[in-house]
Image 1 (cartoon, rainbow, N blue to C red):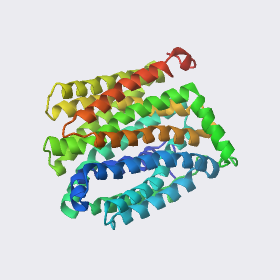
Image 2: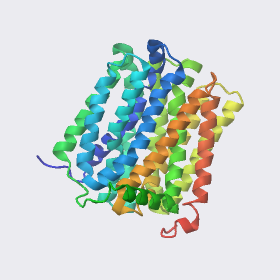
Image 3: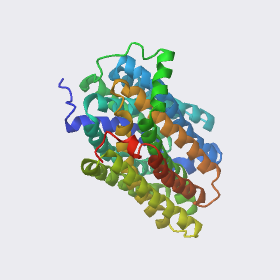
Amino acid sequence: MRRLAPTSIPFTIYLAAAVALGPLSTDMYLPTFPQLAEVFKVSAADVQLTLSIFTFGIGGCQLIYGPLTDRFGRKPVIVGGLLIYVLASFACVAAVNIDQLVVLRFLQALGVCAAIVVPRAMVPDLFAREQAARQLSRMGTIMGLAPAIAPVIGGYIAAFYGWQSVFLFLGAAALIVGLVTVFQIDESHPEKDINALRPSHILRNYGDLIRHREFLGYALTGGLCFGGLFSFISGSPLVLIQVFGVAADHFGYFFGMVVLGYMSGTLLGPMVTGKKGLAYSVRMGTLICTVGGVAMLAAAWAGVNYIAAVVAPMMIYTIGLGVVLPQSQAGAMAPFPEKAGSASALMGFLMLGFAALLGYLVAFFYDGTQMAMATAIGIMGAGSALVFWLTAGRPHGISHEGD
């Protein structure tokens, strides 16, 4: 059977589809939050724990998958991870209480984590720095379709067939990605690092990364921007459905509008990077995030209680996020081609571990208004701009670039 060429559109679609399993696993079941709370007779914070544990699991498990993929290669690791995810997704259907669902969601995270780490590590295997940024942006544009339509599909599936059907869908989608991996994808990292799993080697690798100013700057900037998005992911089902009275099966339309902002940013980012450089585009993206986040917070403080006062600023925020995220991933991994798996994993850990904590806090401080969510998003937008300016955005942090 003919393998997919790395420069082909189908290969880009494959990478995007694999990574998209992560956001699909969060966004598709968001409309079921009220239903899960009613079925299991638990609070909104208890239901949100299934989301936070999933996100925290992805962040933590990446630290394991990074060395694994550097040691054994990209392909066997992603195949093994997808198998775990498929089994855990089908097992979620049989959960009889929220505690079981929380445990199974962690197992889902353990599996899908491979589909997030490996494709990002494959990109620097196959492309140079600027080309990697463009490839990651193209992946972001394509995979943006998934979270745009996921809540809509999830809302309708859950409304007609129950919340369990969402997890059946996710398991089937991962099974398809796994089969494509087995039969049509070549190994992109043939030179294995036989020391990659030694504890001392792992600690040294991660220590080198965390002390590298450029890596840390790009990783923290991307993490703060993503934290704002995750605050919306965590809080929007409560705010839109409970506060503003949006029907669960209509929730996805508003969520999709926000995702369209992200997709627009992923198209804008490569154009700016090509003309002005990677650091310039990230700097611009953080400023856009700041505008959107502060606007939402200002509207909440002013008591502007309209859906547009939440959705419109979030669309602006996600335009900035679409610029920042692919470019910051490329910027963080570029200095470390020999340990791209570890770099991808550590960046993912910083992003998702922080986002999981932030998402839980948004649900914990939820007071029947949009205030907790808007506060988190506003702080993350402004914080990303400040952190980038203090780290990788300073002239000595980007001395090898032409801007």
